[in-house]
Structure formats: structure tokens, C-alpha cells
Length: 219
Image (cartoon, rainbow, N blue to C red; front, side, top):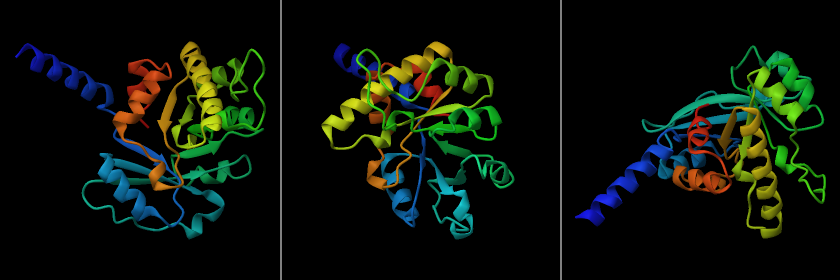
């Protein structure tokens, strides 16, 4: 009986740990139905589809997601179209580039992601993780979230080791600067998505506090 009780307590803690992780942000390319199918099987209740704002006329008008999945749409933007995109959606997302500071200071976007995928080489004593105290402080000041993209992790062990090291550094930096983070796959392929349990466990191992994991699941 005591063993079963411990198991139930552990399961309840896990459920609390990932209770809020019921949504993901993805970047479909005419494969919305596949994303919806995989998301439903993984236990997600909501999907955010991101589309290139410059191609907004080609995005689907409606999504038949059924009763189990709620769909919302947003746009991937850049410095040239962020102002115009603001009129069409409240969810504007930018991928990290040389214009990070400009976009963050403009306050036009809600999330900026992909810092870890910079092509720069890591230094001896520090990772080229794409983030620094200045960017984190500006993001906090302007209420912009840093997106942590687990979908960039692939089957390449060498690439993964670099990305994981950079992500761990960015997690520490964001927690130190109290910068809000968003955990999402930002996947272009449905099978790059992971279950909420796997995602929560991954970011726990990477050093993110449990409260921050739950907070990072609220878009």
C-alpha cells in the first residue's frame, strides 16, 4: 500500500508539473492536418500556426481541427513588415537575426526565438548562444518573450550537443534577468513535436525551474 501511495504522489507531482503544457507553436507548410493529428495524439489542446506575413494571402482561411484542438494563427515577421502585421494578429513572432535589438525595442513582436541556432562558433569559455544581458533586459522591459525552440534538436549528436549547451546558457541568463520565456517546438514537421511530459522533463534536465517551465507554457 505504501509503495502504491508513493507512486500516486509521484504521478500527481508530474501532472502538476506539466499541467499547463497543453499548447505548442508550429510553422506549417500545407501540412496543418498532420500537425493537428499528431498534436491530438500527444495530448495537446491548442496549436498556434505561424505563417510568413509576406505570404498571408496564401494561408488557409479555416482550420477543421475538430472538438479536441483549438487553433489560433499568427505571423512570422521581420523589421520591414512588423508594423503592418500588427493590424492582422496579436501573435507576432520573429526569428533571431542581426536585427534582434531593433525588433525588441520596437515592441511590435511578442516572441523572438532561435537564438541558439546562430552560425557563430562557441568561444572557449562561453557559448555563442545569441543572447546577452542587454537583449534579455530589453526583452523584459518591453514584455517580449524569448522562445526556446526544442524542435531544432535533431538526430545529429554533435549538433544537439552544441544547441543544448547554448540553450542551457540561455535558460540561466533568462532566469537571472527574469526574462519571460516560451517553450515551443516551432516545428516545420509534425514529428518534430514532443509530448508535454517529454518537453517538461527535457527542460528540467536543462536547468529550468519547475515554475518557469509551467509559466513558459502560457502563450
